[in-house]
Length: 161
Image (cartoon, rainbow, N blue to C red; front, top):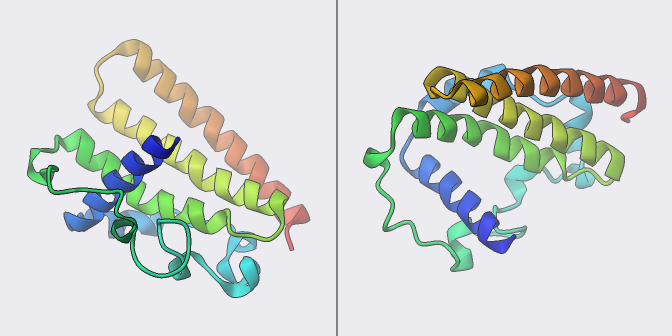
């Protein structure tokens, strides 16, 4: 699990460091429901107040667990860049959503962003992937994840406070 976290954080930091401006445009199409806003989470402490290394001050690179010197953003394929751009939007939102004091709300909010990340990855697969089995799976993922996002958003509207 620690290796996965390091890989995900390294990938996220690589995308941020490479200045992928498209991610800022993508941010306009995804927002968590109002019930997931930072003012309802951790007594006002949103994801911008916490670092990717698990809280407090500093950056993920301060943890000493990441080395991005060996990564070359110019060597990334278009599909890799598309995944990174989309992940730059949903990963912080997922973190923000999970910071609610109420575990039910934290689950729903974190999962909404997580599901949006799955949708985004599936859309990249449909744009760049060639394997029909995986393209079919991507279509199913998009349909299922959208339905589940709707269910969690409805639950939040009825139960989130």
